[in-house]
Length: 383
Image (cartoon, rainbow, N blue to C red; front, side):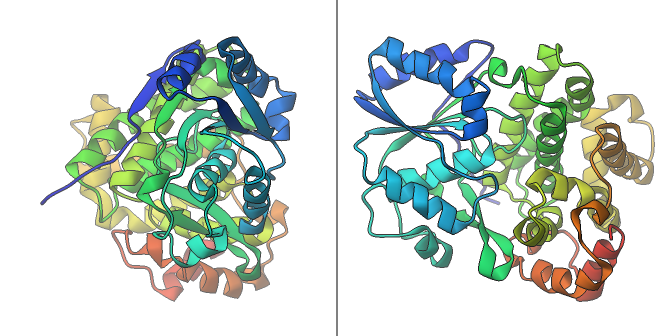
């Protein structure tokens, strides 16, 4: 089997690594940066840290901070229109997955005749127009490494991924100081999202030896550090591990792909506007329990790598242990375990089954085929 994996050409990691911004911009001969962020990141002072580096480097910049959380494709098109009125030669994104995904789309659509909606229909038509630097401010989405951008489609009450290798960022900075003050609930939701990335990619039909390397490394970092990062705001070692684990998960996605957890979460975000990490967390253990018999050996292998103290246990025990740990992590980080508080009603299940079953880009990766009845059963467990 021939396998391949694509990733950013430069990754800088460690506390204070945003100091490398000037060096990157000098290498690219950048004269004006298009800086993408959001109001929350600006208010937290994180965008200001990057702006200070730009000013120290004597590089002009323009800030785009109007993006909504979990944006629709129309929201991103508004940002694209604003960007196309500006001059710039390099893109920097400072934020979570929504900001980074929008920035990756903008870098492809700068001066282009195509729209985001065009890319929903055919993601291959656009090519990268500007180089990109991603600086994540959460420890979970992995968007800093992927060739994906996720947008909501209101008319379908769901979400869809735009996939194009040109969106793989050129530069990434993983600076734990950028997540030092991250609220606990964001550590939880984005951290479990990252955990879903590594577990799904390792148990995907498309998994390869290359993607496995990153999925396993990410799994060990996330399983062993997410609760520490959540419980102790001062534990910067745990936060650094989460940031690196999330990046590894993003790399694993480019070589493999997520499966039914993400597929079935998209209607929850699209219609009910449940945060992406939360919707994944609610479904995560239930989907993996459904998949367990088809993924037993893979889950047992992950257990051996993450928890070598249990290597003598049999494969069934180890696969169940990994699923139990997923459920335990969701509980220990106080993420909701059902959909009641989000206004999802039992009578909504027909919509969920129909919308979830249409996420074939991801469902085809699932090790075990899901019938409509299987999908209904999974959703019924969280209603």
